[in-house]
Length: 500
Image (cartoon, rainbow, N blue to C red; front, side, top):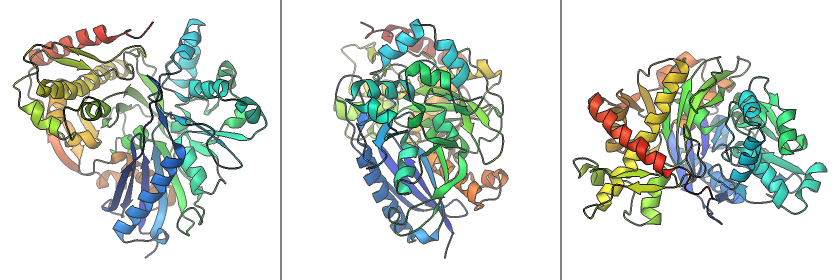
């Protein structure tokens, strides 16, 4: 009964999902739990990393119990995680020194503007593939060093470790023995040279970050080490992968060839196009990012568009203004209307990401009349998710010189048939949803399985991917262009609102 399963941990922005998968990629066990979100000031978003560990440990136990297996039955553990979220902890005690600063957090906008005004944007872009934006980890680390009493002195004494959530979970799972990360997470810090594959001295100097903070960088599919029996239900199990959630989703969607595209819908939405071994530099506001590193194989790259607020806009309808009780209600509300009646919502609740990149943009509702109802707000919110995705896909096609044959979609919101159909309509190309929609976890499992020999090759993994639903476009080009043009007008009006 040993080594028959892979356990995948998907440590997301609002909760942690764990899957137990067998060799046929059939889910035998599944568990999920949310954890707290903290918004101490406007534009700030924080997590309690200790709570994240406690929740993750608990849902691992629950998924194993649901599958009816023990930790001794696992061939490997795979980890995928919310990216850019920044944590510093004490190496001796293992305790965080401050709340984790979440990727959505905007508090370092002034730092990125200073860097841009000083002429450093091209340096950052050339070395990291990223833009100067509060999104990434580097400015978050600098902020913590500047605003936490005595922290820099402790860092200089080698007492403090930095990590994204993959590093934190591996540290905890191994009982503090391993301080590591993978290429994909390192590449999102704004400190890592994605071409030379090393922490970059120029960037560290630019942000005043001591290298002693940083984890060792390893391939995404790689045996990092084994779990500590005390931390992991009495067993030593290989940790076979670590990858940022969007990279894992691209892998879990079996987008292994150049030009294949996936979109993951979650708290935010993230569209990635595989560009193989070519690190394509974007001229349209996209990011060049490491797609993954599989063992000793050459690094592969992707173009990425990051949308900060999509699923969390639906959460705002529920928790912020209370017009729905459950996210699923938005589908029927949207379908109750024959059109959007000119109502548009730009959900810039945390600024705008790709391809607009405006941290000062704010959420904007336009086209309201006395006849506007909650159905219009629900529809405008769902439509905004599709419009933002279209903006990115159009930019990708220009950068890569490729036309999108279809797009593979995953994440919780793909269960909303209105959204998926509208997405296909606005793209003018089919949208494919797999049978298993938790493809971030599946990708982590695929990578861990490759690293440990549980699965033999990518060809075998392609066979494991199964189509669930395919949405064909129905709108003609004239209708599509008219809707999208008005959306872009709305975006222009949302930009720069909080600049002063």
